[in-house]
Image 1: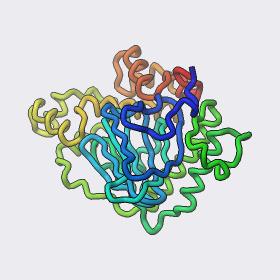
Image 2: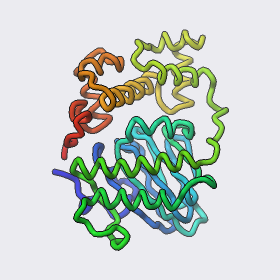
Image 3: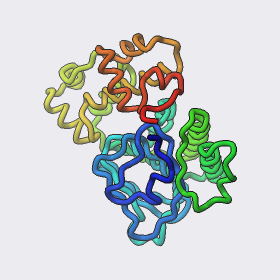
Image 4: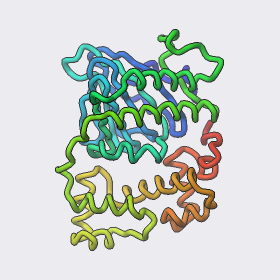
Length: 304
């Protein structure tokens, strides 16, 4: 049965599950002190938040960030997270969206990664906040469909779910504008000097050639560490194991190939480094909420 806005809580509360993967769900909240959400298992979809007033605090794994007006903070799936009004703040007003991020957004977000799958894009003097706000309003209107009322006139309808293909794609186009505008106008990224250069080198290998037959042993040899030492160091600094990070890189590469080429799904499977087509289909469906074929076609999501 499809998820509708009526089936979702007005505001997330501890214990409330995140929206299922494959949906585009969004809204605008203005929360008072005491608002606090904790999801130990994280979410199966990406969470985008853009603050318009007040202050919030977000946690992803062991990484935390303070959200002020104009800040875009993005939480990747699969890592425990929490968020709420920052202690001492009067309120936190923010736009939010749960969806599957387009692979093309990651190069814009990656310079602002702070660890554990969190991306903090701080507001800068060049950030066109009016345009970003308009993009969120347009996203809300597109998600509701062409016959919906103007979103600015319906402040009480706080949660919207886009179900059909056109509504989802239009909403994601508006969110893509948010990502580009905020990243292009942001202040310099926070320095990542705390990340071990050997871990960075492994991450660079994953980006440069995710389809290569990497193993923990081969990666460890590349940075002159023992396999156990690499696994411990990489997991401690990034919040996920080397093989989990490699699988994510391969899935993102596969998604880009499905979006931008006419390669068959079988060839995409091999090019992305997956040996078993069955395994590829299973993990792709878990990650993106639909099969590779449906992803390429922009078809209905699993469970919709």
